[in-house]
Amino acid sequence: MSNVQERIESHIDTLSTFTATPDKGTTRLSYSNEDLQARNYLKSKMIEYGLYVKEDGFGNIFGKLEGTLKEGPSVLIGSHFDSVPNGGSYDGPAGVVAGLEVAALFNENNITPKYPLEIIALVEEEGARFGSGLMGSRGITGLLSDADFKKLTDKDGITTEEAMKTIGLDSSLPKTRDPKTIKAFLELHIEQGPILEEKNIPIGVVEAIVGLTQLEVTVKGRAGHAGTTPMDRRSDALVAAAGIIAQLPELAVSEGEGTVITAGRLNVFPNGANVIPDQTVFTLDIRSGKEEHVRNVVEKVKKIVDSYNGNGIDTSVQELLYMKPKAMNPEILSLLKQKSSELDIPHCPINSGAGHDAMVFSDFTDVGMLFIPSKDGLSHCPEEWSDSSHIANAVHILYEAAKKLTEAE
Image (cartoon, rainbow, N blue to C red; front, side, top):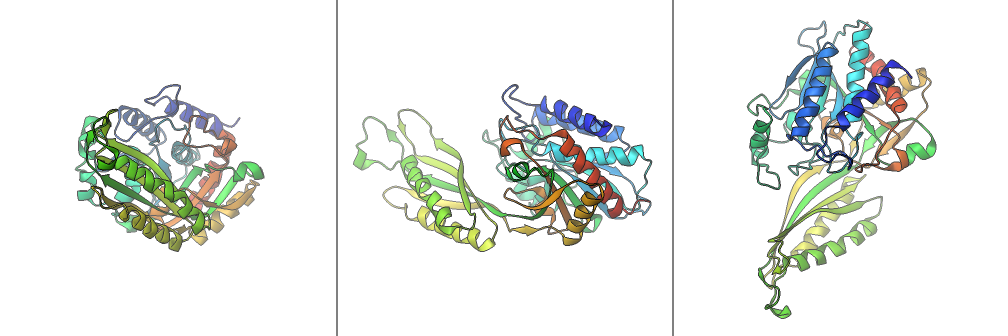
């Protein structure tokens, strides 16, 4: 086993211990104690590998290797380090670790780039705590305003600023970044699906990422006693919400073209066993490779939701997130394929059905993305696993690509 592969396993194993649910997967929510533990570890490794470390007003971490071209734009490599509840050890951290190991190779080989190299670790990609997916990358690029960021709260009503302060982060630091300071962004991610494993191909070069939208549907009714309120006098917010949700799978099926819709988070108020719910709030995740399909389904969802208004029920729909389908940069696609071939690492083109920070950066800079196989196609669960040798393959491809993009001698 190579030194790179050994270090990768050590990084992944260590980061997996920073979880709020030991033995039940990785639960590392943004600005939690587990976030702080992972953050301190990543920063210590960045320093060990000769990088200058700083954080921004969102808590994103940057480890920079200065280039000879002063004030030159940076080549960024990284991913996110938060998780879904009871998730796996590889979704996000594999990409951060790959970035760390690219920096380690620059360090070991005494390479000084012309353009700076920056390893980045991004917050709240999953949206598991504040319901704002891709928050770190959207914040950097200005798609999430400071005002909207400050309004975000978790399920306990704790704001982003309050949560950051709890672990010693400074939300007053600069938040957005001038796109002119970014030359390119590279991201490694686990596939989270079965294609690469079934094909027995260790590297997927991502050509496009699906479009996605996240909606929050609120259904308001009227509370009442479960025993004394007749059925014909009820305005049950949960029954109405269930009626809406039951119709949604057929919308995606009839739209076709791989369109999918998921009702994910469901909150019922007051959530008492003997109280008729007076409010239900649930999220919807809608994805498709073509923007027209996403938009079609959103409009149909709104019509269904609106049809439940009346008889004491009041509904509303809020769009939390909308990302168009994104194609990766053709020059970087070619570069990644070229370096894979030169290294004799089998690869194939692939599209991503999941959203990633790369899709946010693609509107601001040149972006490339690699996938590695996921065992049994599993992700967002404790069983999530990817082979460290596959991560090491990706590291060597990204290292060669980064040398070219930073024009390192």
